[in-house]
Image (cartoon, rainbow, N blue to C red; front, side, top):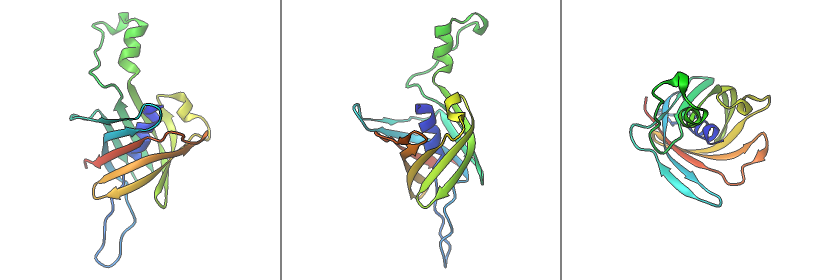
Length: 164
């Protein structure tokens, strides 16, 4: 589930451009990285993601693609992948997440619709994630709101920055 959340957070990264006479609509097109994750609920905590940040989201006019590593320490590859145990493979691939799909913006919310994902449940018909966002310069804060199962009981907030 954290894979999905990180993906969705990165997708919601939005920057606001102002024209001289009239503001332009928000744009999420570009390349983004999550720098901080704030979790609520029974065990609240904040995770600051150090450089180099192991996540990257690319957003075009209608599509997104996101990959990330979700471990707080380095992953180590078995010396011979062909002879790796199930536990070694889980330690290597478990913390890796990836997702791509389409998105839509409505007011201060972004709704993502995965097309392909490491987690097959994210690709189920009707799967989506809606997040509220607040933009300040090239930084955005996104907070989970709901998915296909209903409102998020203990929402996570992601802070992301534009890198390109």
